[in-house]
Each structure stands twice: as structure tokens, then as C-alpha cells.
Image 1 (tube, rainbow, N blue to C red):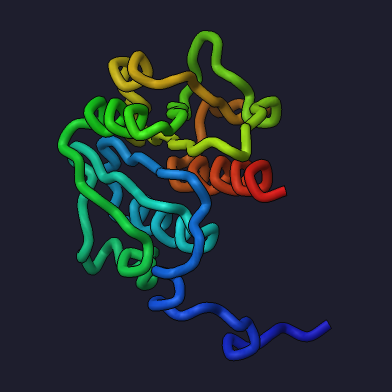
Image 2 (tube, helix red, strand yellow):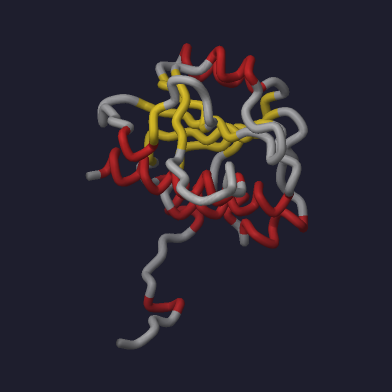
Length: 176
């Protein structure tokens, strides 16, 4: 087994990325404080051809050198828009036909491994603040909550890790 060189990975160009079909998934980042977390979500969103990232509240917007450290240019390939209020973002996405799930531990949440998706639908996931999580008002405007099953002593995962896990799972379910 030999490690591949970057030139052997056959990645598409930034221009080609803008033209290819995207996964029908929007990621909503609400009040994310860490520029590294934001950059990481951009990079993961590039890897799985996410349609768009909504940056809400105090979530920083590109360009920013600290965000670039983890995004590595994905902030220039993945479409994004700033929306001041996450509730407005969720309401607008629902009006556009998206099914919106907040990723949060909540009464009645669906465990990610039990979530079933309709491949003919469009989806959005809301990721909340690193400390406070998704705001209750945003949950109230969502179609539901999804939760990652956890079996250790900690009650949460880093927001960029959580986003990566959820995107990967939804990617598999929508593309299989």
C-alpha cells in the first residue's frame, strides 16, 4: 500500500466545484464563536459538496485569516450567506421547501442512526453555539431535532466534529 500524492487525488478545481451538483443540504451555523470551528465546517462542507452554509448571529464571515487556517480555501468554494437571525434563516429555508433539523439533545429528538431521509427532499441542519447549543426559539421553528448517540461520560461533542458526523451520515443516506 502506498500513500497517494496530492497530484494523484484527481480533485476538481474551485471553478468545477461551483458547477457540479451539490448535496441538497444546507448547514446553518448559529452563534458559533470559534473561527477554527467555522473554518472546519467550511472544509467538511467542501468535501461533501454541501449546497450552502448560513452564518447567523455572531458567527464570523469570510474572509478571515484564522478561519482560513482550518478552511484551507473552502471558504472560497462553498457558497455561504450571512443571516442576522437564525430563526429567520430557518423560516426562510422551510418556505423554500427544506426540512430543517436542529442538532440538539431535546425531548423527542431522533437519534442520528435512526433518522430516515427522503432522497427527493432538501434538508438543512442547524448547529448551535459551542456552550449554549441551539437556541430554544430556533428549535421551535425547526421540523425536529436530531441527536448523535453518545456512550461516554461527556454530554456533548465539539461543534465542528458534530457537524462532520452529521454531514457524513446525511451524505450516506442521501447518496446511497
